[in-house]
Image 1 (cartoon, rainbow, N blue to C red):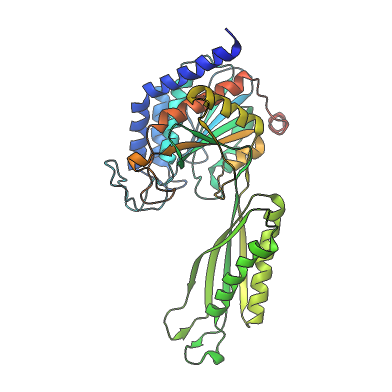
Image 2 (image 1 turned 120 degrees about the vertical axis):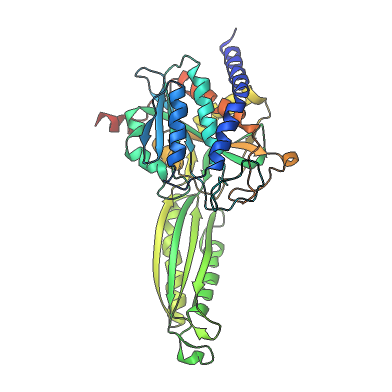
Length: 413
């Protein structure tokens, strides 16, 4: 029997084992779905995770406020981290599911309920095996709200304490059919920054605009001008987004307001663009407001960095996917996504791969996008996710993953 044959049988065994515990993962996912909690408010979810880990004979440790960390395996060998985020969104659910959210205005509209269930399932699978190292389970709070839970876990030393040498995570993806995994090496998701602009004028009567300085007109020109940043100031071969998401100003149709507030997001995939955008935005705002006699206030807030997948870790994920699900199960993503993810912080510290777990199923009506009030997950994807995560951990450990110099140096200090 060749080593490759042994690994094939091992991975098929993981998938069979994951399918056997599907009812368990479905139950966990639905319990969490009915009780969604916002970022850093995941108190009940944390308790559920701690209870389930205890049932597996594992000691979960509270971390990053409402997160949980647990370790499988023993020894001094470098470890592999598996991560699931836990927070929900301020969305009023409209799915009509029998396990609909019990909390008005809150919903798991991004699949984090499934992520927790999948990681608990992976823990059950790995618990039954002799591990060639350690697996660190990261149940992370607050992915949806910068600064996010990942940076806090890292600051608390979760990577250095356990000698983490690689990390894997996944995200549900309704654009990919259930039973397939989306992969891409290099940049996968964008840096996601925020900006706020206050355009100040001089209020007055709507019938006497010459006696006022209209901030609404100035703000409209600012919005138009910001569109030229991507179309005319950024190299067209480099992806970027500048979006104004909210505009607030004025109180009545015949009153010229004193100020208008704009809020938006800027996204990029390369450091050169990431560094350039804040200055370009202010150039537009300063020029437009000066030309129209208005003034401005500008705040730019850095969000999550670019999520860059490590080529070797992606190769491991591809091997596990093809051997467990079939030669055509890997979907190679042609382009990065302009959404953001705080898994990027782990990927900056250790070689990492972030996977897109196919959850789309037109027959079941599982087609709605993330953050939609009708968002749902095809629960047939839960065992797939658990088996692939567990398989990635086993394959990485078997390949002798080593703690990076950065982690090793910090641990030594």
